[in-house]
Length: 514
Image 1: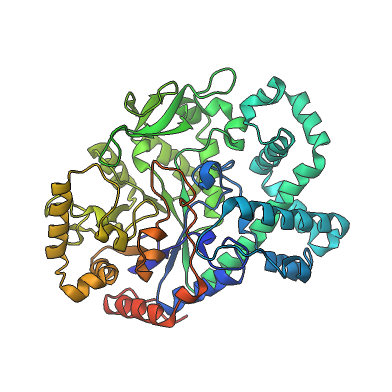
Image 2: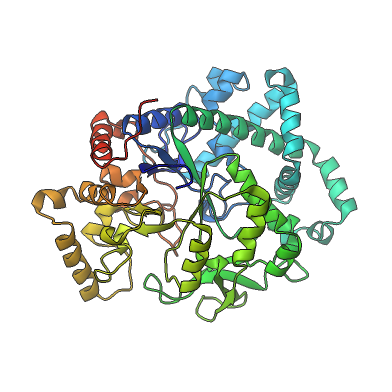
């Protein structure tokens, strides 16, 4: 599968790493986690989009699809560079250990990043200035728009770009030139923060590759309306003359939600994208492939057909299916970039056209064990029905943890008798005696390890056997618990690594010694 032999890996977003600064980052804890993966015999580290967070602190609602999240920049690495002093980070606030308090973290880390930029202004020799300018030049195709967008957002008190003066909404060249001159310091600051993220990420990536660890990133199909992408490329989206979406994305009603999900992202004008040779999309794939080895392509079914909701509708009920760009899209991009190492997120109601599109390009799909027992023995999510070209999961960032799912308060619109029948089937299928039920997470991990699926991936919460309190996201809700779970340093125990390594070895997925 995309050059990765039979193997296994862990899903953990970098924000969930431990550390003293309120949020996981690209510093020492990230390197310790890579060491843990090696000790546990894993080959893959999967994560969510590495972009700045947006509405609800979601990495799927970012102000940029190209930028890195500045909150992931390691303060300790900045001290090593001389951009911060040891005293600057000696007494961090008493942040919670097990979750990210984003409001608090943003204030604290932005203060540190502002200080690092001020140091760079006063002592530019503390970074390789030539390297910085080469980075800005190479990344200018997205970085210039992003840096100006963020500078303008700061200047307008965080207002949506559609609320800025009309000449900026419409990107009048004279107005953009004037803004870039007036906001030159803020513009350069955002370029600099992206440079810092890039350097720290590429160092971590090199460390992963040296240790035999591959990285799987994530491309959400849609981008946030309040983003540099939509502001800079309005012609690619269904917008009115003031920049507001006319139709928005979502999914129809299903057993998670009686009214469906109205995500609210603007929808693409695929005809316009096709006329450009899908240039922006090609850049998007190429940019992420500089950072990672595999890409999980979110909501893959939207490339076959997508749910279009009039922007005036409050829910997703009154939407309609519209054909997506289909095979022509992937053919065009592969002509430019070569075979794409894509894992297709094909969850939900999947129609034959979606399966046909995946098979045409050899993209492996996903199977989630938690969904396997709602049906009968023919379910493609059951391990005995797996194919080799597949990525199997105990759960994803949108699921409850295995322990939380088994204990049973997970949100579903399924009738209680259906849930009870699924649990009874799972009990029989997994041969759950008292011990195996007490360790339901290890029972499920073993079931996937033993399958023929070339790649199996486990959220870190499932490896640790944590309950619903450790859930990463609950779709269709917003609140302080989404996207905030964090790992504690003392949870990366040698006995956990040893047990995972043992199963990895038993089922022929072990990473050879490097």
